[in-house]
Image (tube, rainbow, N blue to C red; front, side, top):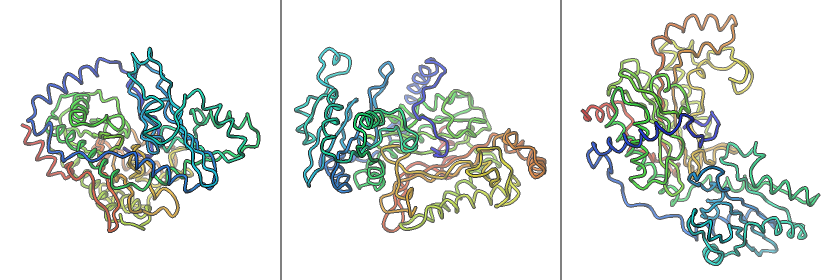
Amino acid sequence: MPRFVIRSLSRRRPSGAAPLLVAASVAASLAASLPLRAQSGKLGPAPAPITDADYVARRDSLLAHIDSGIVVVPGAREPVEHYPSFRQHPAFRYLTGFLEPDATMVLVKRGGTVMGTMFIEPPAPRAEFYTGTRVRYDELGRRLGMVARSKDDVNLVLDSLAATHLPYYFVSDAEAVEFVANDSLTFGRALARRLGASHPGIDIRDATPIEEALRARKSAAEIALIKYSADISALGHRAAMQAMAPNMNEYEIQGLMEYTFRRNGADRPSYASIVGSGPNSTTLHYDHDNRVMHAGEVVVMDVASEYQGYAADITRTLPVSGKFTPDQRVIYQIVRDAQAAGERQVKPGVPAKQEVDSILGVVAAGLTRLGLIDSVRATIDAPAGFCRTGTTCLQVLLFMPHGPGHGLGLDVHDPAQWYVAPNQFGVGDVFTIEPGIYIRTGILDILPDTPGNRVFMARVRPLLERYGNIGVRIEDNYVVTPTGFDRLTNTTPREISEIEGIMKARK
């Protein structure tokens, strides 16, 4: 899933329930028509879960970066909707493994001694008719090795700790890494605001960078869980390749893939599933998934599962008819070559910019050969906000506007070691490589009318008619090893011959 466009990954489709009901029905019938192997595949043994000892070690690692202080880690709140599935915030889950809503952990480190308290929903027998039985204080205390109290006491305790004159360290409870800087509405931010107003002069600090640095380097247990999630996701992609045909609706493929994930033990999709055909293949985060797919089009499927909280993130581009046209094939191969160029740069100590530049260079060279841009370094005059800085940027960004990768883990956009100085790949980084080319028929309409742009637009406009509505993205997941990398998504076919072979066999 491209990282450049930022919005909530949990946004609900506005078009009503009917397509979802149809999708569920179609998914079941499609799955029933597939051979058993296509439905279940060959998953290896499920990896071991993260243990209570692992969570203790993570908390100890966080506290090792703090001399003395009060660490506040808020969990996700109960959703304010009619019984949606609750999902714990990645940062809170990483440090506690606790998966119930409305919890807050407070750790106090002073003079080498640590005391922990978990504030949770108090027992409410009537409410538990609706929610199921919630964990009790004594049970949670034994499991986590800390005191458990009612969530209603958290402000009282934080106020009382002000007398220690220790600094407060807050770990953000923003939904994802991208949203931390602009967070003003979360429960944790409100706690810190109230605390500062009630106790002028207290020292409130941000512990989020410490927690993110810990999450950035994945353990062997985490890598195994991400790999398993990727293997489950591969079954969904293979099922889609075997089932896809002209005149199906996008939501049929979405339903089939998500059914396959759940049937094989996944928690859920790791983000809103993207199944975009024809013109929708050129919209990066298209997730309406409600268009009939036609012969001769391509469909971008950015769809993956989450297993025990850990996300995979896989994109494949398929020809709806089962065979790429010559123009689609050329563009697909440019994207695949760009991904391979990025892979060749991945090893510990290599600057991430080197990988990005390699990918962009291959895409730009390919688009130059097709005539869609003037040269690898050619520029356009762009509208305000299109370029990262200024109003002049490379022409290639018209056709690949997003970054070609991001960290992956408990969040689909998880921290990575190369996000911070010196911005180099490190052992244990898990991330995506996802180049793409998106040829939107109306892309020239966004450009301002300048002399330089007029020449470029006049030359390129006929080519947009030829290549229009071809969107291709190929996305795989990787872990940096001491000698290079491993591709965690190696069971998901990605070469043209593999994809066409599977789709041909479906008939």
